[in-house]
Amino acid sequence: MILLANSEAWPGISESADLLKSRSAGLDAILAGIAHVERETKVRSVGYGGWPNMLGRMEFDAGVMDGATRGVGSVGAVPETVPVAALARAVMERLPHVTLTGEGARRFADEIGLPREEALLEDSRRVWRERLEKELSREELAAFPDIPLAPLSRTITDPERVRDTTVFLCRDAKDQMAAATSTSGWAWKYPGRLGDSPIAGAGFYADSRYGAAACTHTGEMTIRCATSRTVVLAIKLGFTLVDAVDLAVEELAELDTGFLGPVVIHAIDAGGNHEVTSFRCQDAITYWLWKEGMAEPELRTARPAHTQREN
Image 1 (cartoon, rainbow, N blue to C red):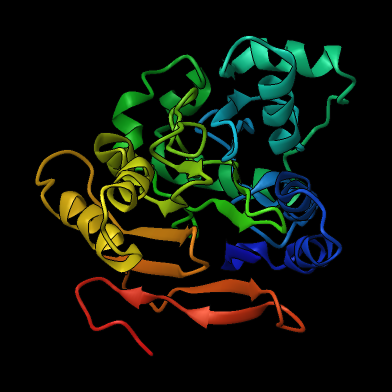
Image 2 (tube, rainbow, N blue to C red; image 1 turned 135 degrees about the horizontal axis):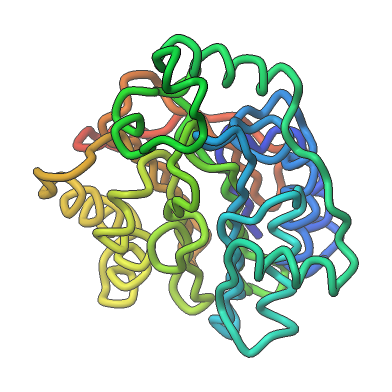
């Protein structure tokens, strides 16, 4: 058994590990953990703690994948809904579709009994409003939101440079893999923007025969390169896990147009190995690891891209 998650997973990683220890199904274990992250206001990229879009509204994305069946469920730009990972699972299990977005996803949440919640914290609203007042003229403020938003998408940057997600990957006692993601998305994003978190193959992918992967940070890049699928496919083709991740990094590095930024790749394989590699990240990246035999999850440091793997 193995459990891998990024650093934002701290509110729920221990519960996920405990459930795996008790031989719970992997998807059950990681969704129980991710639910705690979504409720934690100190995590500024997920759920209640996240930042709003340019209009001051919260929009949430999530995705899940069952590696045994390659079943996928995802939701994007969902308003008034904090447990979006659970909603994504319901899409996978209850609908013939893979992805729902916006008001359609919220309608489905109503049907399955998820309450509507005001998810924007008052402090987040204050910071958002102060940023608008700094960037917009008096005339633009008077007309807001009925002004062009596209020019602002390049000038209004988020207060904490939040472009993150929470990602959980696991292989359970039955050697089945699962992946889950949840995020409030890029702070100050254009309304309706989807990153990689709800896109299977880009932000997450799991195939119990080979491996699972998930990405954080600049989703626009991992969508273009189908990064998570690249990792798993490379393993299928005979690459080691490290070489599979390095191949995915190489593809990211080949991009030289469009919006470019840092990416972190998290991955596990069917042999119980794990790899977390950071690409273009200025600061050290940490992640959570738990494996069978470990008393508790441990916080470790990711390997920077194009360096020797640590022993």
